[in-house]
Image (cartoon, rainbow, N blue to C red; front, side, top):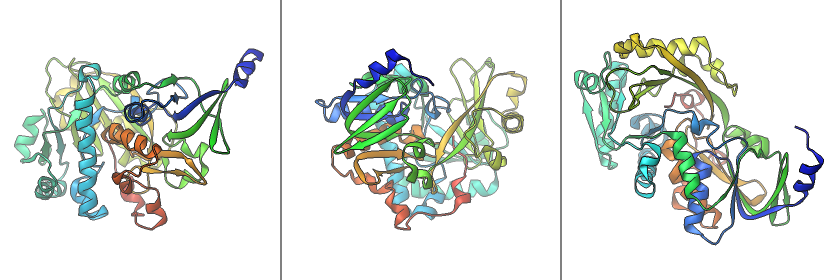
Length: 404
């Protein structure tokens, strides 16, 4: 992109803030929101390369689930029971904060529960065996046998499922915009940050038409983070997700979000009857390890086959829209938070592994606290130092499990 003489003159005039947040998704907008709540005197600016919610935050299914992308037994085996429980509680706090802090009607908030459905007998065993551990963690959950699970969501072929009463759904794009509007930050869209320059105790951020300066910066970015902080390439990689939306059905058969096949597929039905379905990535892994924003016939056919198999009444519904989005995946399936190497005034958060709506609002509060030079207790769940210390699992195959 070229720069005109008028733009160049404007660019020379720095716009200064106490804190600049880079990234206009759910994590960035939530960080700006909580900075205003925790430290109202701060001057906060938010820079977004496109429009708010342009990336993964505006392209997902809008599930607000508790826990990670995996089932609870898998989390216990991978992270240990204490960490699995703390991750569940963190995401439960995220859900509760959304309900308590914000006006839910602004983003179609519904919390009628969620169903994690078993796509196989083995998965059913895992889900059933998770129940007692989930209840110990404070989760309100019940196990449904195959008939009950299928009847609950107008489906067939599921082998059972866990119904969690606190599961919720939102319109994710409206949520992002609402959180931004409720913050006290100056929002600058269409301002991609091309360069960061660290000068003494401040940072300069250059966009194609303007320069910004701040004492501190929060980088709430997905797989694009390494473009600004190259060392983070080891903790986040791009992965594509694909979805589709059908024409409206006459009846709402699916009253709650459905997450099945170890997170490999996910379905919800909107109030107007349209059905959203996504996933299928686990059957096309190599092709979906990309940041290219496009759908593919193979993955779309996989999603349709799943939808028509488990929700046969959708076979008569035409597909009205198909889309994709790029997410940032971490090596061990947990978000990654840290300080920019050699620059303590910079903080980053990335690698939400397709589960950003489940973490994002609460993560914004954690980042706002971290900017204030305090060390939040929950930080140890996400700190980048876990990779340096060898704590994190390096099971790359497990980290590629699908998300909703």
